[in-house]
Amino acid sequence: MTIVELPDFAATDRLAAQIARLVRPGDVVALEGGLGAGKTTLARAILAALGHEGEVPSPTFQIIEVYDPPTVRMPVVHADFYRLENPDETDEIGLEEYRQGAVLLAEWPENAGGFVHEPGCLSIRVEMAEKGRRAIVEPGRDWLEREAWT
Ligand SMILES: Nc1ncnc2c1ncn2[C@@H]1O[C@H](COP(=O)(O)OP(=O)(O)OP(=O)(O)O)[C@@H](O)[C@H]1O
Image 1 (cartoon, helix red, strand yellow):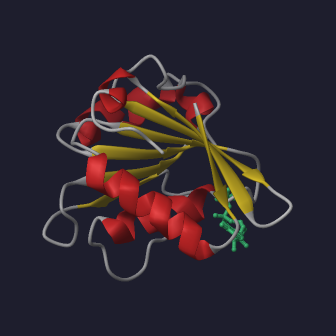
Image 2 (tube, protein in one colour):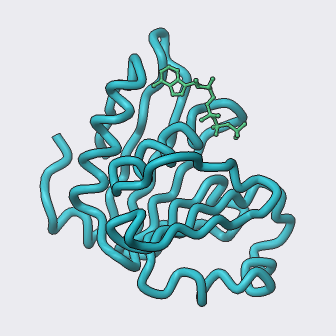
Image 3 (cartoon, protein in one colour):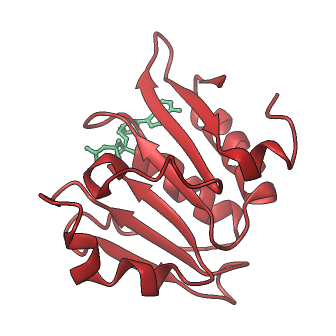
């Protein structure tokens, strides 16, 4: 587990750049944290670090937003599971099909059953801090093989 202080948006962008450098298709970046914690901000920063320019609508109502190359370096699925009442609903959405060959950026992952059992899961809990935010990062096995987090 690594704690990364995010006192400002530049710090969020640096963490996002590190994630974008290490992430591979098939991975999931699970973004936990309460309302207003800063999950969408980090998801947007990761998308930007992967090359996306322009708007990143919050997927709260759509549940899933898909970004395909060449706007991004690899396919990205940005999902917000806030409104899911049952993890089985991910089947109705067709999440597995969307995820093929893509990186999943998942907000409220706990509502989708969580992804922590996946070796490609990078779990990040965003919390309020005295200054800005703080990220508690838990890399899955695949991530540990890539590079140290500090
Ligand atoms: N590193 C940071 N430093 C300071 N403020 C931040 C930081 N990251 C995010 N914020 C602020 O936190 C607020 C909430 O951010 P965001 O919308 O990303 O949260 P969220 O977790 O996605 O919330 P929700 O689940 O309600 O959609 C925003 O006003 C944003 O500007």
